[in-house]
Length: 286
Image (cartoon, rainbow, N blue to C red; front, side, top):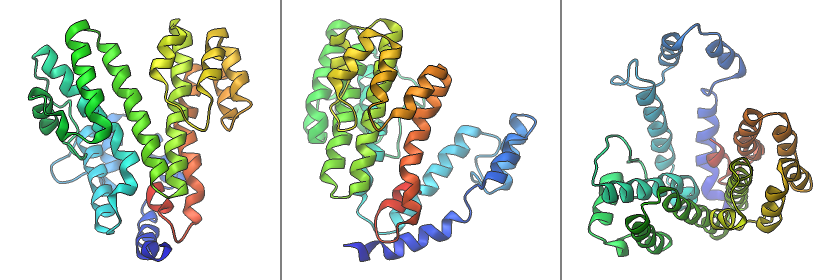
């Protein structure tokens, strides 16, 4: 099994040389304004011939380049399902809202995922839920009916977001790759922690949190809910007894420090994969 990754990892190792170093990032931070930042990125080869001066287009093109490389490695793309599910379920949410409001909003869909936006919209419009993957069909129908009858957009979002988390965790479990399983479980745990913190700030009930959180190995949902109901400091105390103890310190520091920790925690989990040579880990990290 490990031999199939030998070429792929070697290719990624070569490409990593062109990634931004700390000194390059310092140069970017030193740019005086938005336009200087864009110019700096373009000088580093970011974007394409048709993206000049457009930050969103530049970032989109860079993401496309990454997926072009990954697809060229001839690795089973199911290994990367945990990365595509957030966009896939976002398309489902957007399509349901478009159908229910009978409005059409530009640029709200992702096209670089298994079911592009327009296709997802046609599926929802025609109620062709059997065309969706098994982990999406039921929640798609239920969320559509819920939004049509209640006009509660938040409830619709919660239903689909939880289904996305459950699909991510399931994909991780079924991948057979420890790093993918760990990455998926970490994604779900971080999402649950965010839900607890935000629910505490907005005074949400235990039932609300229970309807939004997905089970995972990293945190205990019921204990996290009880902590959230008791107070923010109780959430921090609970986290101190888990693998996410550093999140407690960030939570006590500030809201922005906590949000930054959530992002950094995912990166820290993948950093050791740089030193693997015969697994999918370096590809996922890249």
